[in-house]
Image (cartoon, rainbow, N blue to C red):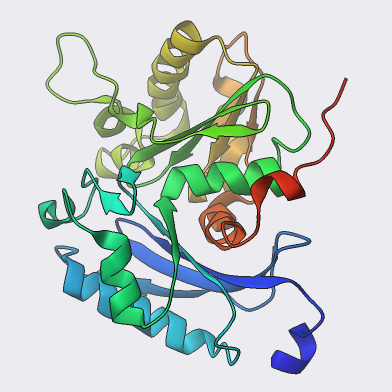
Length: 266
């Protein structure tokens, strides 16, 4: 592996999710995976020591021989100054937790640590559907929950957490109602699920007047089954990197973001 990738600018990205933890070695010039994606199940309860053990397993299985290869880690929580301030689909023990230092101590190396949807936004602005686009772009990841990344003229506005907008006169928030997990839990078909997505994206459209919606997460590979059913004023497209965006974006944190951004379109 070291011989094949010696001339490439590379980093490892690890994406921690509510159901799975996955990682790969990434080509930072192209925004592509240089290895097969390694994936393990997120431990039941997702408490810090168990998640760290799973991350160690993913990293070990990647067999990255160069100890200087940067490592980026994406996590499903508000992340500020290395501390996780929320806990979406993981243990409440992550709330107020010094997560970045915990992973650095456990892995014995420096890492780049950020919210999972935010790094997916970085992947799309550097290498995907938001590349070279002006204006306000809103990326959402539809999976166990709903993550969001807000980008203005290529600049990330972090920790938006728009999956947790509240539904008037309802007990649960948007992600409980409209995430892909809701479709699976309630055995909805795509047309029925699309009605929920219609409410969600119409509401975001009203709140932010975006120039583009990007839809990521594993279900985006089935985008032709549900995106055409939505009636919005804003263009809506699937993420180019789909379920790999978290890996690619986490790895991309190892390189200066502004350096890699393309020239703006007219």
